[in-house]
Length: 471
Image (cartoon, rainbow, N blue to C red):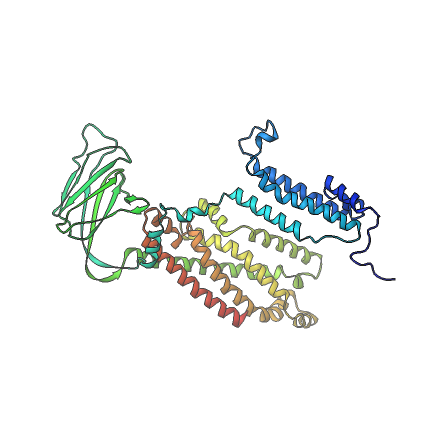
């Protein structure tokens, strides 16, 4: 008896015009009456699902749902309905082909559906690539910082003067003028409201040298003055004078730094070095702690070691469930939760990385145990050895090399994650980045960026070599 072909005649003989008309009225009906009800049902469910997505996308969140027309975004409906109509018409054509004993290619409905979902995703996320060319973006400062990271500095002779300013105005505002070290600075107004524009003038500065302008709030915190998303830096003229228009929130500070000595590590350079050292140490401690915890858990999560009886199989499934559950929670989420308990600092980062790494390494270790040669295990068991002796003499010698490779690889991953965890208070260099971002210290950000790139690249190379040798 010959095997049926893919294009065999359908189980029911239906004229192709009838099948096509049925699918035109109800998607998939033509396929169903021709005996291909599964194909017809799949087509119907696909069109219904796409229509629901179109309706959901066009519904306004503030809609009171008086009528469907009131809630639907008329501008998006025609565009999103085109792929649905194409799939519907394809169903008509497919119904006619099925009635004749064939079937149409599925490429069109899948491509049309994918394009519609892409369009829906674009509309939901409201992506605007024009933001990449926003003139107010700090692109210039960022690129300049990457080209000139803050690692070293020179000993400087400084001229710094603070001009008091009051906001809002009182009956007796400060004079709006200050003198210090031969420098005189004056504000055009002695008080005002936040955001008001004033004129700053200064004399007695170093000639032809940039001067930074800062403002200081009542509790002593300072921040660079910014205009058009760029730090405000004004160059003094040949006589050491300058004039600048600024939006003054609280108080003005002029700061000039004239290099006079040899190169030395800058303050931000020292912070970057310390932060990277802390980040690497956090990742190393977390990796060691997680490896110590994952090794015994991996033996309990290995099917070939825990399949002896019902009790060990139950332990196997329990351990697998525990590792999968813990591994599903990202270390960043763990850090956000732990920071409320342990506070800001490296302890939070180490604990978050350790908890996630225990689950990740436990899974990798257990798979290594399951892939070992079963011969030594059977030989050791034949001598009457206990479970612990079997692990000690038959399993460990085979799994130590892959365990080392996986551990080093996890250290590499933890260094990257430690940077991200620092952003939420987990210590390391990541904890410094928000401060520099808020203060527009682009050179410090650039220095941190290159430090992270170099460290991650080196660890990635070491990890690859270790896994090549021991993995």
